[in-house]
Amino acid sequence: MKCGYCGKSNQPELLLCEHCGRQIAALTELSQFRTLEMAAVRGKTGPLNYARSGTGYLHNTSFVTLDLVDVDRKIYLKTEGHIVLGREDAEAGWKPNVDLAPYGGAEKGVSRSHIDLFFESDQVFVLELGSANGTRLNGVAVQTGSAHQVRNGDLLELGRFPIRIYFD
Image (cartoon, rainbow, N blue to C red; front, side):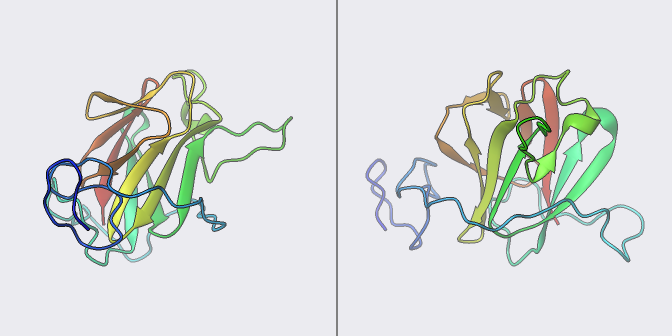
């Protein structure tokens, strides 16, 4: 597919241009799949070997690691479908795929439905879902409804809640 902004050719079915990063395809509907937190990846000892920092492709990686920087906690997620990060609301019966409330999410400005991480064409994207306190990707604000490619080692800030993303 040819990018309307930079004019360069891209692999078919990409959402964002792999050269300039602008959106080249319409977002797909949210999938019906739910991905829940995995307690840990069994059999791993010592530091994890992450893909080269800065790469934007999963290269058949089956997990993404969310490093919750301020609480020294890692969450391992399977790279399929859509994963909503936010806070549980028991009264409304809402629970995101990854509930950040137990890690101080409410105090740091995480909304109930804050972001959607989704996996498409061997890439990871973040979609801001209209949160009250916003989302930043490497210090740059992510606009509501706009998808941005996430690269290995990127820093996502949900309000004041920092999460470093690694492709494992």
